Image 1 (cartoon, rainbow, N blue to C red):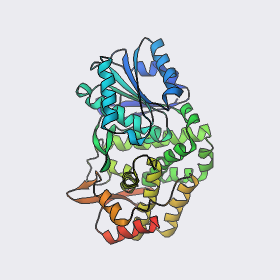
Image 2: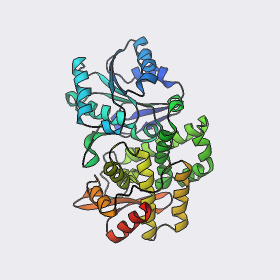
Image 3: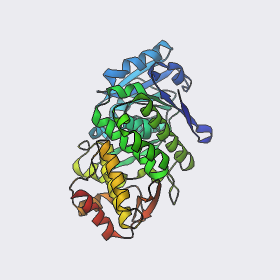
Image 4: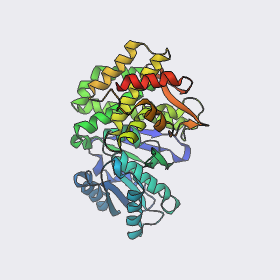
Length: 363
């Protein structure tokens, strides 16, 4: 069982990665201030894994409340968040009750935001069950909900005490969800880990066939990359680079998700199309070659991901991107590629090039 650490001083926490971890109640109880938890899951994951996790905890003497929310990105809103608060209050959960997120990125974001705000903050644990959540959203403490004008615009930084990534849960993951998670895996190679990118190019078929060893390696390498970035820039305040680099493709991708309606595109699908846009703009700025862009596009396509954006029109893209959290003093900062394996943040100095890149990738 590989264990990584997110180094945040007194708030440092482990990431456990391996098979059959849902039954390892001891890993969770070690992080609990009191033997009481509220598990938040959704109506797809709960029938598969909630009984296993809750049963292991109850056998270890932990009192367990269960909260089930609707599945899907469209449920990441105030209404669902309030449903979690209603259940916590009905169960008389106190400030020492630990909220556990059992599910993918949506459940993690909702449960984490509830943990950050319920009674001004309660302990939180992530038990991610999708590839995307295991390699990205469960690590780093970003929580929140969507707004009709923009994705993830309301939220808080609230670090978990523990991330427990049971790779067995990937066996029930739909193929489309596996591909969506692969977009975030590929991201790490593109932004800071060229050897990993090259490994992905040589092993994508193994990953898509769910080879256990290949998946375990990809998850561990991705988490190691994210843990390092988060430890250096927890709240994404670095003026150059830093945690913002983890958002390669996300500004374009969030525009797609908002523009077509939450849930129509999976997050990873939108990020994949956005990554191609970022690579194309990088080429137009003279940083990447045409062969580099094709290399990015080909790897994403091998992961069964879209490489063209939704046909929203350049004007709509730019309007939606103007609501991005990386806009500072009215200037949009994009994450682009100086070269494969090295990302940078870039303020919008060439709107014509940006519009042309979007247009070229949505034709």
